Amino acid sequence: MRVFGLTTEQDEDFLIDGNIPVRLTHRDLRGVASFLSERGLEPTRENKVWASFSEQGRLIFEAVRQIMRPDAVHIHDHVSLTAATLYKEEFGVPIVWDAHEIYEELAGLEDVRRKVNPRIIRDNAPFVSAFITLNESIARVYAERYPELPSATLIPNAARFSTVFSYDGRLHHAAGLDRSQRILLFQGSFADHRGIGTLLDVAKELDDTWSVVFMGWGELEASIKERASELGDRPSTKARISAVPGAAHSELPMWTAGATLGAIPYEDIGLNHRFCTPNKLWEFPASGVPIFASDLPEMAWRIREAGMGLVVSPRTVAHSIANSINNLTDEDLRIFRAGAVEFIQRDSWAHYEPKLIDLYEKYSRGRMVFSKFFRLFGRRR
Image 1 (tube, one colour):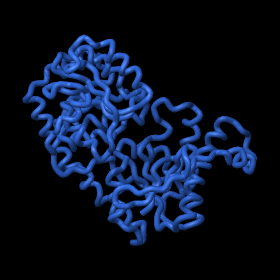
Image 2 (cartoon, helix red, strand yellow; image 1 turned 180 degrees about the vertical axis):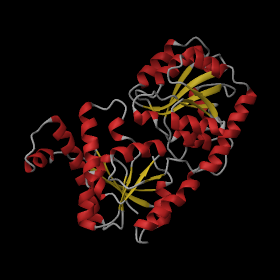
Image 3 (tube, rainbow, N blue to C red; image 1 turned 45 degrees about the horizontal axis):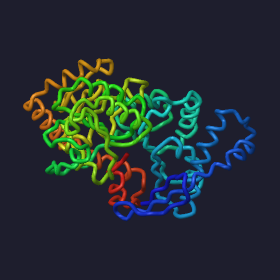
Image 4 (cartoon, one colour; image 1 turned 90 degrees about the vertical axis):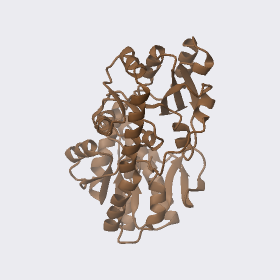
């Protein structure tokens, strides 16, 4: 098993868990102009974007070809999919496309990419041997728009789970909060359309037993810190808003365990958000943490069925959300935590791993080294 990708820095080789080698190739796009010229294409914005993605796919392909002859190729995005025909022609091996998004429906996507992304999928779907995506709603979208793709195998970004461990206080300590303080935790990228503005407004309405903690990075970090300063009407040990840096993925569950509720307040903006089932839907329960989330269909039914948290409409005003959170009793939270643990016990990565094994047994002609493969893709991002 080897992993290939791109970097804006110089070429890099390193090992990840399981001693799996990774090769990151410098993202050199100087070949884009030649790519267009050789194909007689006008240098329009759409053609330039398409050529840029194609060149990136080719760079990864060339790195693969220099190092190994694969038994199968597992592709994780639409950019790498541009090289599907190259893999087929050079190696004649199964290609598994693992679509983690509806790529033409990404939030905030510029119009030209809404044209280029489906163009890439249509061009390369005939070369795909097996297709993986996250849930039934996304699978239906792909089946309707790209009938050339194989029927989808549903494998979400589920977390591994063994047991809920004892929390050591690290999240409260980093946020400067009393250990008794209840935490509504947002983890991940501080990006638009993820409900960060709503959480900042909710923080103003929460009672003094609750704090909102943002853990991660991103373009909205300055806005979060500015609002935290504006809402500095409490002692720092009970601050309305705190921001802490992200942590290594291997340590993340120990940080997450300090939350009282994990927040997934995504906005209903496009099908990719509406049908999302993000990693946090499994990562929060894997740390014994129930969820506060937007009433988006694929998230909402799981949360309601498991009884593991609060679901509110993306249009609910901050005051009403805060009231719902303020009114949670210790017994409510105990029931939510029990539901979260029950959910992850039956729906962890261990439930989906056999589906991936079955898929590769069908398409790999028995030549994949499964144990190494699953050490990596048990942590799909």
